[in-house]
Image (cartoon, rainbow, N blue to C red; front, side, top):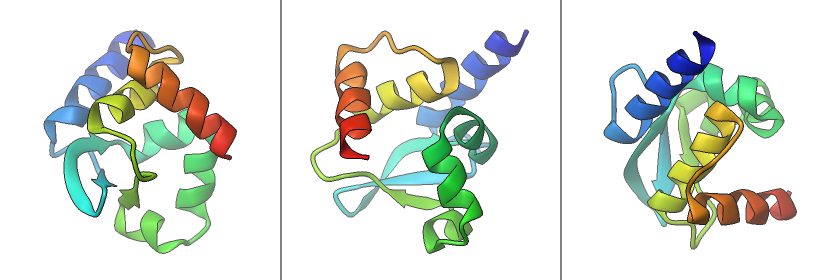
Length: 102
């Protein structure tokens, strides 16, 4: 049941669902990819720290994506955060690069 719910929420994220409360900015432009604060916090210590630290990104729900990361690649990262796996080859590369970036 949880997996189905996570898949449903992940499906909403790139479509700009009103239920998604986080926007991602790609190269200075708000992209179509959105996320859910609770899912991001549950799936990633980095996002959890960002939202709980009082940083402006967490307060406003607008997060800048590192330069050079595409929306397609970031969708793959979100798939990994939401589901614990990614079927997107570029998403897997983004996960590996961002893990190295931290």
